[in-house]
Image (cartoon, rainbow, N blue to C red; front, side, top):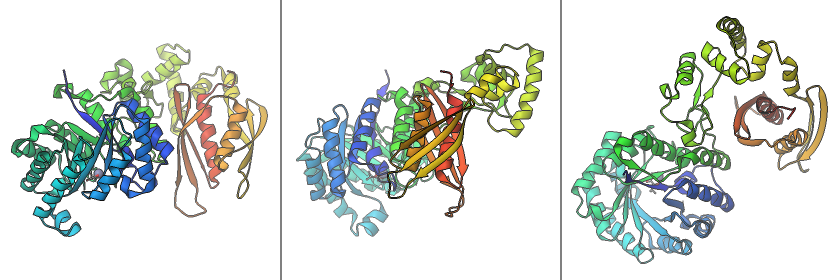
Length: 502
Ligand code: KIV
Ligand code: ZN
């Protein structure tokens, strides 16, 4: 049986510190519940002394969550610890996370102190927190750049003072995987009483090595990992929960595993991305839009013969319905044959060769080949194809100090249909009006607006992910009018999703 690795999620603390990612209490509870269903062991809910809002969130999360331990951050300051204990009062399982800087730069420049005084403060903070809770975690801030001998003295002292977990943060994301692993190994071998506590990793991604460093720490003895969903966090972010989970599932020979329900990774990633307005890059490991999409001919052929030839993870294990075979000019006959087969065509080799030549011609002109393009290429069902097309004929939006209101006229298979809706902004109003015409259950999963040159006269590019049932499609629009660009992206997405005859 695999050895247990505890997952300490800090999406709502280190992740939420990121500018623009702030959530209100209700949103934080929604994320906390998703993390509970995902199976995290410890949930860092906030830094209660930092603001009344953070205090309140820790309090409400403590009431709403029952399985994970709820953790609150403090500095090594008595007042911080008093306030954290108060915020955690109603938690079923609670932990105080206190700590102080231990690197040369933190001790002398930031704290204007000495190593001996810092050691005393560390011990005093742990002892003080122990008055309130049994479970006290100590963080040795900037341990990544700290001297290992001094770090070992601090770790030994805080364990003696009662720390149950000792966190070794690479606060600045400085370490190489070998250095971080050696640090954990050094502590495992040189600290008296190390087995009375758990060592925790907490790595930042400034050099893109947070996941590698965390794994190196685990391999060398750490049994808790501090992670965030989508790797969000200060600057370049923290270690991503989904990467650690799946790295350990892929490398079972390490004999270490978490309690994470991996099938919930995608939905949790989307929830965090949407609520925090933090898009996930398309090529992000595990949860990016392209993580299971194959576009080159050689890869498509391989995946269609055997998924494992180009995939180390079954997409279903992380909550993705299936691998996507994207048809582009680099696709081969195997991918085209596969897609045509799904559309109900079975072709002999000669016929396939002819259609493939036409397909390549079209793919050179058009980046993304859709089912309706294939139907047209096949010269059949073209009428049905026409019926599927939704186009925007008219859009008027009233906004400003009024309740935003939009009127749209959509042409669906040659018939014009009108609707007017209100919304919490002009884009919301316009999309509501389209939904009212379509009368289909389409969920907007991701919405990203980018200005190209940043001027106010700029063209805005909009990317969306829209979902119907289990199918997710990408829509794109570009216009100087951002409402129009958003609606174009939405309609582009739904044209790939829906069948108007349904
Ligand atoms: O990166 C860091 O050092 C932290 C500590 C407060 C745990 O986030
Ligand atoms: Zn951090």
